[in-house]
Length: 539
Image (tube, rainbow, N blue to C red):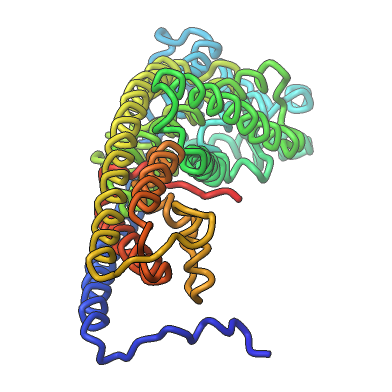
């Protein structure tokens, strides 16, 4: 038994004139969209690669505060080491006066307020304690080499970037040990108590970098918080939007329900879905947090933030689906994803200045709000800027999405009326032609209207029209339910009033079938204004 036996039936020759025209149209359209897609993806690749272009060369834009509370030889060693390491690929060490930050707690607050990416300070009296440890065995035994240089940082703020910065700070501290020997080597050796192992240890390893990590974030999943998590949320909302639109198409709701009710129910459905989706997303983050020190309050705040982000993206994509022609909606989706992700791949300090326009994108706002939540409030200025951005998208997209419902409802009625007129005109023309060419005769059978048309065509060896195809071609589902009722009554009355006296019912059926099929083909070319965007037809 052959597979798909109907696949080879009703084929036409390649030399057919109609096929030649269609073939040219297909090739022309494929070439046009091929060029558009190629240029689009070239632009997207260039954009995202451009955000990372010469990344290391922008590392000097990361500023680190340096405060010398000691005022001795250790500070001189750090300055000399930094002068030897200074480059575009190395962070900027910005020395501040101890009077400005009288206590190390002030430096921690400066890092929390993102005035600096981190802070390095030398403890008061560090040089004197080191000198005493080198010359006195008793002092050497109590010497703490971790109480010399301290590094304050927040690992939750772009973890991969801050990890690289911390590695450079360690490089600076190691280089400072060499500089210390160069600056104070002779005096240190002359005063060194070689009989004391503790003094020798202090000389060989005068300090170890102490760290104050505001929010340790070392779990493996941190690598995708600013990439895949955001991407999946955006794609998830696109698919749900297509599902909702598919339901509206399937049940013809745009032509039957009042716009205000549709606006309310679409908002309610999207809010409930994004509520569930955000719980799952943040729940997965927490489930795989490993030893990350975050609590339930931070989970709740993260969930609410993700909910807002997911819902505003549903509304924004809905706006795009309303006002863009349907073939361009997937292009808009992938562009929206790339633009948002590029705004949070790396800090703007490491990207060309042009990319700072990404402050206006919701992904950048939501990720910085997450940093503030996860680090206990240590990203305040970004929180103050991010929340207004998210609410601006929610409000503006909500208004435009509501306006889009009115637009769809308007064109649903227009499409239904045009479809009804087309059916009436085509059927009336077909019946009139058949009546002129036929003679007298009686009425055959008890069926009439579209049902009789379908049954008669089936008995004559034809194929009945598919309901789904007719619905989709009638303006992307605009008024499908209402249109079908009116169309059925119109065709029924026309055929029942004229079918009397026709000699051949099969001839009438064939004419009607050809007329309505031609009407469906014509309607397929006029669907732009009735397009509702992405839609999955659900069975």
